[in-house]
Length: 262
Ligand code: F6R
Image (cartoon, rainbow, N blue to C red; front, side):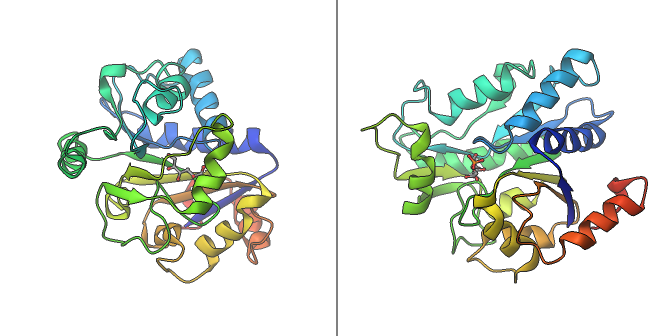
């Protein structure tokens, strides 16, 4: 796992965007895995800026979101379908017809989830998967105790995740109890993973993911098994890492951080 510690959120976005562009370079039909939430906003803003500058063109890219709530109207502004449209599809000038979000309102959720995994395979697999991490160590909505072999499926959200996400909902509006999420097995098939994390409230989860044992109690710790996983952190998110100085040393002592720390 490659860990890069940045001075602030803006630099987190820049470093992550550099690498995403690097990884996608020359691909005629790049396939992007997309996370929602606060963490990747700086990355998406930077990618949007680079798209305007002409450094990269997302018009032929295909997108697959990580997850969607169950029991929320896909047209609701807080559905992940709409969130991805606002924060990714429009700013990055992607073709909306090529961007997929799990169907949380399908009559047969299991069949729709299996179809989603098939669609990812048919597209040739995800080239770069963008990830955030939950304060309980989840990725996608793979909550603690999720199987490392899991595929896209329905999951029950923990109370902690529902509390964390309550900030997006209006007072009196309930955070959904269930979701459809790509599984850990699905996520691990992406060719490259880039995780972006900011804030002290994520420091424990980051420490468990990077330095803890690989355990279903911290689903993100599965990244330790991925051959190309980059984790970009701000100082606050990195504040509990025992190896922080080592990661800083790696980044400072070689000119091309892309080749290090894996
Ligand atoms: C969202 C997702 C989640 C979030 C995580 C962190 O698509 O997959 O794993 O990345 O809950 O959320 P934020 O970034 O809002 O703190």
